Image (cartoon, rainbow, N blue to C red; front, side):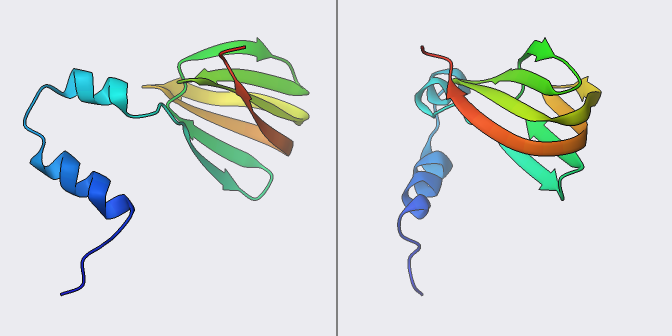
Length: 100
């Protein structure tokens, strides 16, 4: 059977890891999961806060990133459990480093 290379190494490490999850999670980069449905709806998992909320621009914190979503008629339909749903006409999504 062929062995999975690349990301498979991380999967093998995680499968064999028997320590606490907290130190392991600090080692893994904090990256948001984003899913777009056309340019009308966006799901952001890993969202930890709202920095700006206007009809043309929404900025969210997500781990080590600040996400800047621009467009028109933007609104946050729901936000719970570190998951935000943004609707409106989405023109762009930018990843900005929160580290300056």
